[in-house]
Image 1: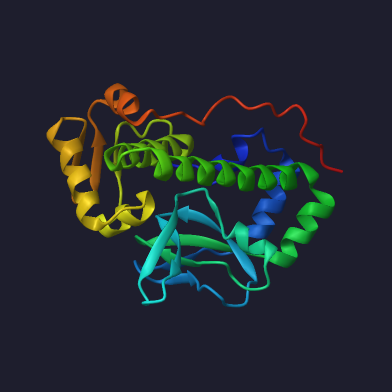
Image 2 (image 1 turned 180 degrees about the horizontal axis):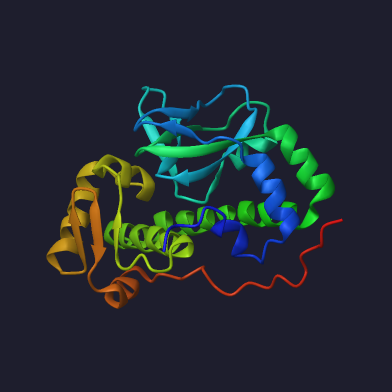
Length: 243
């Protein structure tokens, strides 16, 4: 089964024929980006969000010394750039971590969605709230877990998101992150991130070879991380119907 780009939306309820029509209208032609190429730069005029079709991107900000710091990883099916809707300029940069295909969605198109397709608009709103919960979990992780536990949580979270769009993906997955990237995402130094990765490998919990990761003992990893799965059955009965 191939990854489904609309999985983040359909997790909250079924899309109807009108929803798919407006998504097709929103879609247009996907653009290709090479690794380290920017879809959006922090502080630039904000004019669009992106539907990520394939590949990995990350939201990032620049430190005072010019070094990039990753904030959030985005996978196939993610709507990327939503936080910047609240601002005039882009809140963060969006950079490709792997070869990427993404569809630009103009803000003006979102106006029609919110005016005429309230069910789809509600789903987009719920995706943004899901991102907020993920940020909340990350803050709790950084504030209260060991670095090994944080890295374990990161792997489990990414794996759960991959399974959301591709339920038959299995326990192995591609992860184009450097140790510096991992360090950014869990709030530590690259040296400590490396030690945590080596610990997970040496204890037989994961296999991590360059950009190929496999969860070898998922139950033990969940127990170590104190991981709370957020992919649960959702109540879509309240969602509005399209006009």
